[in-house]
Every structure is written in structure tokens, then in C-alpha cells.
Length: 210
Image (cartoon, one colour):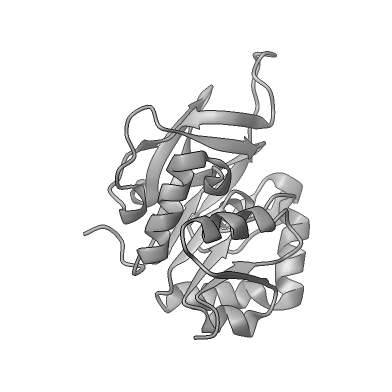
């Protein structure tokens, strides 16, 4: 395997912060848009900030959409972050976009009647695990992670929801499907608790909780 950790580059955000956080926990990570290198890597991080439609076009042009699906089908450990999680679902309300279909479900826009609730949801918020998963071990009640998003995932199956967060409405802030685990929050921007999750990912075999 040429690259221990492959960070998917599809023109969707500052990937250097993810790469720096990987280095903090001892992971050597490469940022690339080469699908062959993705398939050859030991594990994959699929981050992103931006719009669903343009992200899907970039993934498709590079052949990264098919490579990601193949990696997950093959049991490779893959970590999705923020937009990476959202475009892993079947469909997003953002730009009415058909997305990757890795995790069954949709992505909806926050809609609030209370003007004090700002969109996007930005800042620190509690993440409450609701299903055991190796990457969530050690998260305590009250532990907060950093969020920046105006849309949120709605998995079709309750068994795919690993953690919940409340922002006027309760939404899935982490999902797990086979060797794929994804967070709506940004572990690379979440200080100690975020680095702890990344360190667990560096050792995760891709097997879900038993």
C-alpha cells in the first residue's frame, strides 16, 4: 500500500487542516484526487465543505465516486466528515442533488421559526452516542465537537445512527455503515476530543462494534 491514509481531494474545502490533525495523532496522510491511490491506500478520509451539487460533479469527473464505493464494499476503513457525510446519503435537498447512496437516507435543510437560531449551525455542541462504535469509545456526556453546517443527515434506518445532537431539532451527528463511519461535526477542529476520534480511526480495522 503506497499511502497509509488517503484524504479525498474533490475541491471541497481546506483539506490541510485534516492533514495536520492526522499528523498530530501519528497518521501519515496524503491529499490526492487520484482514484487509484485511493484504492491502494490503507484507509481513507472523506472530508468536505461546500455545496452538494458541485461536490458530486467533482467526484464524478475524477472517478472518485466509484472508487469510494469500491473501497467501502471491500471493507476499507473510511471516515466521512461534514459534507462527506451528507453526500454519502441517497439525496440532498441542497441543489436537489442525487448523492452517492452509501448510507440509505436523505439530507434536509435546517428550517426554524425562531430568529435567534442561526443557519448555518456553527460552533460547539454536544454529541451523544446512541449506538456503540469503536470510534466513539470514551466520549463522555457533555463532550462537545465543532459544527459548521446548514443541512443535516436523516438516515432511513435507526441502526445506522451512532450519535445524536440537538439544535432545535434532534439530528444524526454520526453514522456508521460497515467499514464506513461519518460525522457531521469536524473532528479536526474539535480539539482534544476530535483528535482522540482520529487516533481511534488510525487503529480501526473497519469492523463495526460487536
